[in-house]
Image (tube, rainbow, N blue to C red; front, side, top):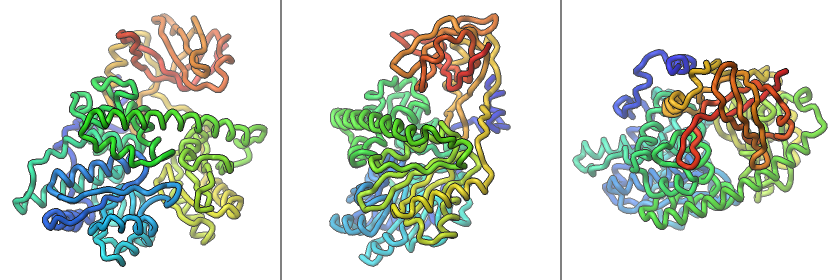
Length: 543
């Protein structure tokens, strides 16, 4: 079964599943890594004041914590961080953020998970006499900022074998190159960079970058350290407040339990809270900060639920599936920090690219885009910008997710241009569900569920195994308002528990006698007992 699953994900050789750290490619393939390590080594040796410029999502927070703690461990004597207020300053190293950074009297600015598009911000920092170093993983535009050094695996001419590194992964490689340079100079501290892989794993999974071989090594090694009780106090505290068992943690827990709690700070408040949690060496302080993040996440869920209900009202009564190749939605009451999650939910629901907009404090609309496979949304925004200069104020991002700003008066014209580009691309979701096939009754057991759970790490581009089958319904009941708890039996097989989460109308399924499911073979732990459970994400009534 595992062989079948791996083959379905493009694995052809057993060594591709060897996640030893020694299989990581060396840093040398990253363009600019030599200049970056040279500047950082000089800053460490001279005791220069380094200010890390973070991003306000989980990738940016973990990359910042990694940079600050890693540089300190390697001998930097004056390292601090700053993270922009997303509502007031927006994303990245803007001129406004440079003005605030100058109040800290830095000598070196080091960006993490941002900076590749900060042409004006870098110019302002250079004009102030600062050394500017950029580490990023977002796609570069036509013009690169005039920084002293840039490391981004997506730079033209970069030969690093993985283009999927998250911002925290790029920073991990920068620290590795810096440690090597310091060793050559006889100035290296005895530092095990692997001790920070819990941060790398969390940021990589939370940023939903493709889990290629390099990222799977980083994530698996980070998970191993968390399971062994070797995580940083802040990561341990996040695991604790999420109710997960650290000894049994998998990548899905990073994605759906720890990541959202960390992201909640940047969405609703100030990511400084999250970064302080990750940096803390005091378990008591880390626990208090993790509780604050947990409370912010509960608040975020309430806001998201309200926004989703309002979005569905906008869609109600219109045949969006037939009318539009993409959706651009806006409500003046929506929260700027939550539109990304809303766009993701609507994309999953409609199978179409979605951009959700909210008003920003600077008078512009802030949009968050989520795409579908085969449609590179950042490149599509670039095409709209090239065809209609001035329509978009700012944009940037990845193939599957991007952000943009535009004037309210331009929304309708942008929506028409965006939808036209999507329609012309001819890419759509035809509703087909892809699974790993059916399981025999003998395979519907706890042992296989445990093996599949640990066979990852599963995630973006390396999806968790998903199966399908037909079942007789023995019992059905609603739990938690929107979840459906089922007792099912396959033909000539054992009686099994199943659950389907977040159904719009769970009561509509209570009278079904037979169902076809697409599901994950999951492990359910309840009152100390572990048993197999089907976690369904697709239900179809059968006669």
